[in-house]
Length: 284
Image (cartoon, rainbow, N blue to C red; front, side, top):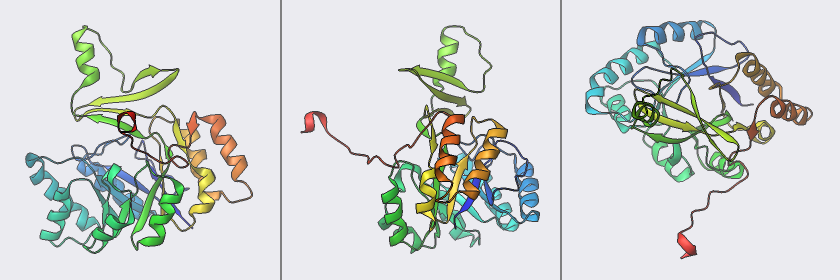
């Protein structure tokens, strides 16, 4: 049975999930909230005392001046014995090996985690987890499951990041037209769809207009180690109900739960049923 891991929007514990993914301010991207180091340490201790799992996403593309802080954080997390560190930048892999840190690593290079051959490449180098890309189908996810010994973490509910830029696209627009806007989340509208936009100190991220709802796939994914639910831009009460449904779902109630989620949120199935096909201009 898959474990349900949530990406929270607060530091409150939820007893219906099996664990959490959190981020550290300055070292993480595309998360609802970011913890300062001491806040993260306090939260990690609470989670462990509650017998739940805790993963830390250090998934920013690191720069040279990030490395001293990154190394200190990795050492602190190693002392806390978190369940895993999600990494995008290879500096985390290299620092962990150089310092002989014992925390598990999670290969989480977003759009690159799409096949079992590369999973096996990292597994042979001591990486035991992979955070699977959100652009592949259910069948492709199951193919990876059948052909690697890595533990799979699969995003199954929530808004998906579509576009990332280091430029401050919203802030630059507002400044150019002398506009004021203190919103934490902005939106761009296209063909009646609203896309959430976050513009912070790390740049700009545009998210999908619909929430990925993959609850119908859960019975097929019973051999997937972790299913990830992202709370970004959702109501806390509604999200807590989603957690309960994902924990209880089976072949008998999946249709009912799927309908309930679709009635509460604006949803789609992302790429779970749709293969990504690249075409050159005019099929040349």
